[in-house]
Length: 203
Image 1 (cartoon, rainbow, N blue to C red):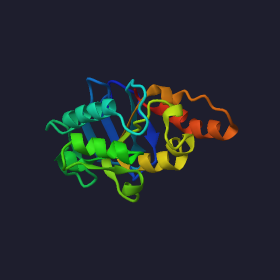
Image 2 (cartoon, rainbow, N blue to C red):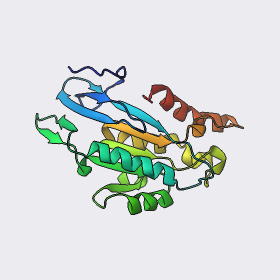
Image 3 (tube, rainbow, N blue to C red):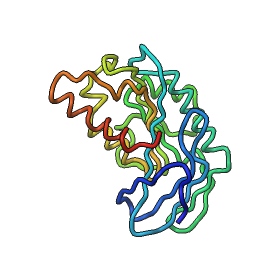
Image 4 (tube, one colour):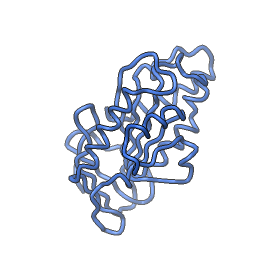
């Protein structure tokens, strides 16, 4: 089994496959090698890319810029994975799905990224999977969320987004979203899933 020199592994039971990833996600670095190997359990990677911005409600040009950078790194021809049948693949755009909670961010992503990429809302990708999924939150702060915390922080929506990824899930968002000023028990419950994600993610 390959070892990750940057981060400890995060273990999840998922699809009876073991995933080991080299690299980390940041503004200047991304995954440089992905190795899939059949095993009895899985190593599933989650990352958080912190992007500072302000005043954005349902779209963020700043996040689009960084998503584009991640895509360029992932698809430049030197990222390779071996699938469960032992076949090696060079990661291409067909291996990546990009998700956003708002149609406005989906539209902005589509207008700035290659047409071959699959980009849509959480609802669009229900029942679909990809080796790599990128989730762009777009909103700058909890108070900027146009449909409130109940929509943006929905545990079900986050769960569906994460479960679209077979091996790597990259959440792109403003860190202020992980410091909400909760004013009710329900809001605290909503924020808990995001905070738990941040605890688990490699940043």
